[in-house]
Image (cartoon, rainbow, N blue to C red):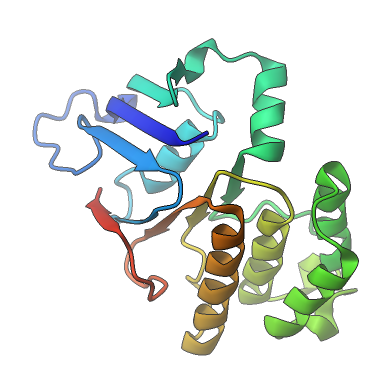
Length: 214
């Protein structure tokens, strides 16, 4: 997949609004593989909804989304399975980790499905992110900032053409935010992938190709 095209997308909850001012909603937007985007938004303007629309998780919008030349509403279940395993990665704002499992077990589930990263690479990421000592701790016993780092590792345990990071550093200090940015971009560059980062204020300090105001 080389492009994701948004054609006049608007959340249905905003359908009655006549004062929508946005670089994304009701516009034609092309996201290109290999480029880096920042989506800045105020709370409640649909930032996480946008990620869910592109990921095929939600459909409560008007307009069209195309992967290359394919309108995503035409895709079947097996096609979505393939897309989410091989082409699209999403670091959810709410993380969606299994709290009863350890950090390592959460990542192992994903990595066994894709077979993409080595155990050594995962160990290195735990160390670089400062959570090596929490690897075998149940997620329910970890802080939200520690969980964000676990969720990042999980998101990197697959091939992808595009990766979406929805407020990935909201609970991290500057140093951990820097490391998250470095690891995210290193893996994206290795795969030649596009990166879309969202923020309602604090964001990773990167050289974005384009900033979109939601």
